[in-house]
Length: 267
View 1 (cartoon, rainbow, N blue to C red):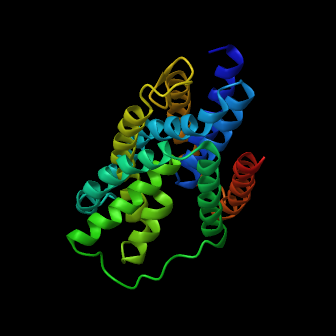
View 2 (tube, rainbow, N blue to C red):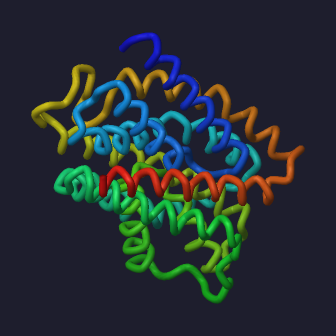
View 3 (cartoon, one colour):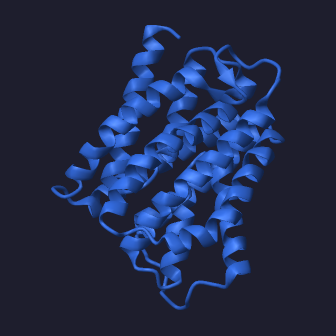
């Protein structure tokens, strides 16, 4: 891995870590499109770029979620009961998501990612909270919800917060608890999704050197180190800046990134 690529990935990891701490979201929405740009510019095999970007993004959550969960747990904000109920479905769904992705070509995966990010950006831009109209479902319902959250997160390389937080608030879970619990759910999502990406990408022809399955290990190390370092700064900055306004700006950035992924799919 050359110096230019290392610098680009350090900058990318720093930006995504800061955004995650500032806005309380995972970095996958930013990381996947920008990593796609970086890998394309460095001449990575076209047919594998999106798969590698998504898999590597998901693997970074293994590291970033730990520091995030520790902070939330210290404030007593994580509902471990909800984590235990959603985790079984999430583990299965997060394995299925990369399996689906492995059967999609790069263009189809780019389209799915672009549409998903556009919907997430719209949710952030409107900032409309779901009506708190019911309680959490029973055990089979929580298992099913976890499966949906895990599948979507594993497919797009994100931590699942754009799905799990609205689901929990819709079920009358306080927003701060929902955000903290979603952070805790990021680890089982990343663990199962990472193992799935290793398994389903194993022996795939044409992958560049340094990959473990679909995961590009040099990028994983650089991005994880950078994002872990900058996330606390983002969290502290969140208390001094109008985060609600920043989220609207960030939503517009997501629209641009979604447009780029769709452009890649149709060019």
